[in-house]
View 1 (tube, rainbow, N blue to C red):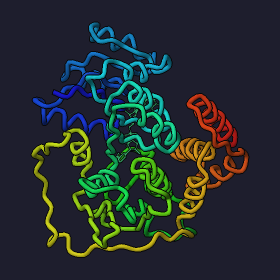
View 2: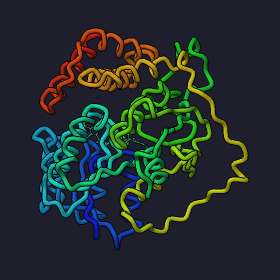
View 3: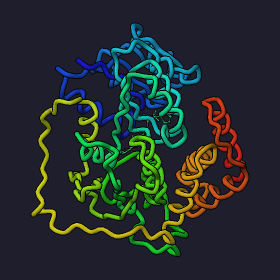
View 4: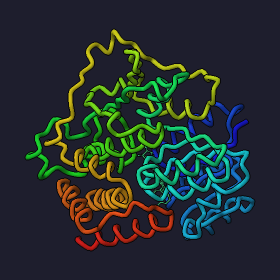
Amino acid sequence: MKKIQLLGATGSIGKQALEIIEEFREQFSLQAVSARNSVKTVLEILSRHEVEMVSMAKKHEETIKRAYPEVAFYALEEDGLETIANTENDTVLLNALVGSVGLPPTLRAIERGKDVLLANKETLVVGGPLIREALETSNSSLIPIDSEHAALRECLRGSDIDDVERLVITASGGSFRNLAKKDLENVTQEDALKHPNWSMGAKITIDSATMMNKVFEIIEAHYLFDMPYEKIEAVLHKESVLHGLVQFNDGNVLAHLGPSDMRIPILSAMQGSKRMPFPTLFDLATLGTLHFEPIDTERYSLFDLGLAVAKQGGLHVVTLNAANEVAVQLFLEEKISFLEIESLIKKALNHYTNDNHLTLEKILEHDRNVRAYVRNFV
Ligand SMILES: NC(=O)c1ccc[n+]([C@@H]2O[C@H](COP(=O)([O-])OP(=O)(O)OC[C@H]3O[C@@H](n4cnc5c(N)ncnc54)[C@H](OP(=O)(O)O)[C@@H]3O)[C@@H](O)[C@H]2O)c1
């Protein structure tokens, strides 16, 4: 029985991970959950599972303790996520948080020797070098849940990473892929949240529309597979059927195809080496034609900018991520327009200098400063 600590249990990935846990009750149990404010959903989860630990915003402590006095409550404001990640290592941490808040618990779990199943890509975006360093002295495995990286992991099974010539991931193009850049001026939040292929949380849906999500996924692939940026590519693929592809140096090319269903990569990460039955409908003849094309970097201008920052590394990537998180939130709150997301990110990048010597404290402090700086513009 694998005991799962599910951070971000009330989100899109969190809920689908719960479906998998409930589908395979003999194999998985839920040991801990976290959320920020979705207290009703957390109470529902507690009614279905014998959870030992909960972390949420402090203001929900009384509600949780009144309904479930036997559950240990840890406030987010008092490093609750890290406390969960730091507990005994017969548990596995599934990180489905959104944003850079996911970095400290991931790092703590790896230092504790726990396996981490990672949906929270921002962990690697802001703290990739720290995570790689921690993995070198730990027994833990870091297993991706992001569909493209889960696909690459499947293609790489049994192969030597040194034999890889190129990693390719695909991008759907997001909710505005049929609009020209000039038509993005007045797009609404409601339209932006209508992703053509996937049903996901709000932040990643907006990141898909700006193509920032693909920048983050290239950074994620760089650290997960220890692959230079020059060997990682992204292509537009509007059907989201082919998720990742590996080209080997002997000419062989392996691609991973599958339905747009995040429960598949979630189960793949959770199941270990023995596959668990999870029937899905997948029929090439019904799919018909698949399309691939290069990313138009004038149309998706954040893509080149983001990649250039990624290649510089250091605190500049933290600036990119923090400015993006705040700008996306401001757009969702209808305080800025869609195109202003990019201009706010550029302002932050121009304002701060880079520093390639990273520590967790430095990252967290810089993250806070950039957030305050960007919020100040509105
Ligand atoms: N959704 C997908 O299909 C998908 C696919 C690939 C990768 N990912 C990645 O997976 C991660 C999660 O995405 P998602 O779409 O599931 O996000 P989501 O639906 O927005 O869920 C986020 C979860 O994190 C919690 N949370 C948000 N802000 C927090 C904070 N400051 N402190 C503590 N907890 C916080 C939320 O709690 P509340 O409910 O209380 O706000 C919720 O449980 C992201 O990194 C995303 O890029 C997602």
